[in-house]
Image 1 (cartoon, one colour):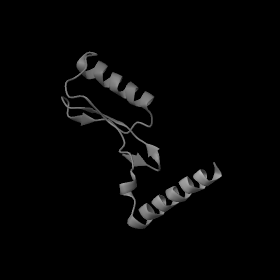
Image 2 (cartoon, helix red, strand yellow):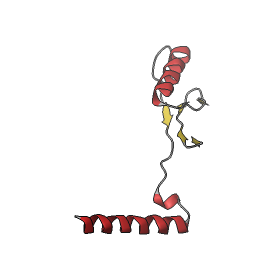
Image 3 (cartoon, one colour):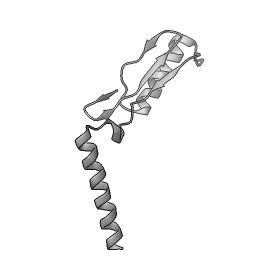
Length: 85
């Protein structure tokens, strides 16, 4: 999950079948996870517990024109670097 360029994490408890609201940092996510464990599982780690991390964007996620431009730019930068040294 991404919102306005900010990485968001979520905690999922398979036993309770619940997913936390989005957390803006790993620290916030850990606090949410620990709070859930304490309140609903007596501090124990529930089976099937998950951390839902944001999906990382790859070159293949870009539209065709932007993908080509990224490859061309990379080649130009590598050639320029090689010529300089």
